Amino acid sequence: AYITDPEQNLTEIVEPACRLYGLSPSETRLACALADGASLQEAAKAQSVQEGTARSYLKQIFAKTETRRQGELVQLMLKSAIRAVAGRRKRPFR
Picture 1: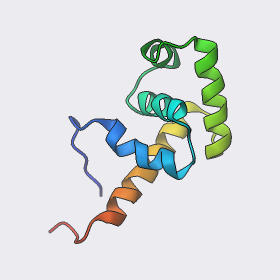
Picture 2: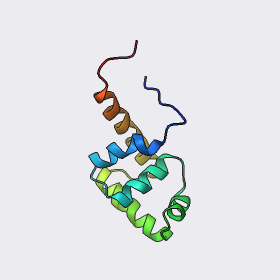
Picture 3: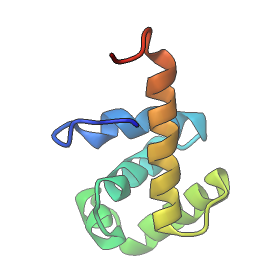
Picture 4: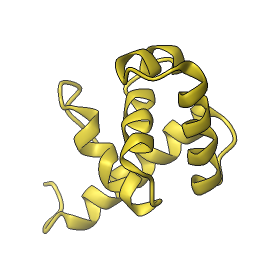
């Protein structure tokens, strides 16, 4: 089992997974916002881009991560991030 602090900024957790999949900075910001629970519309507004632009970023993210839906993308990002963090841990929790 992996436990994360619910107060921790998800960007810190998800960014390494975004790098792993070769996401651009704009795509990374969008993926982080979606992982944090934002809708596509909310994420677009927060990034000051049109919804169509955000949708284009999302299609590129889907292609790079081989996912098809936002829920699948978020699940992949969080699983990948947890594995990356766990791989850096020096010793197991006791």
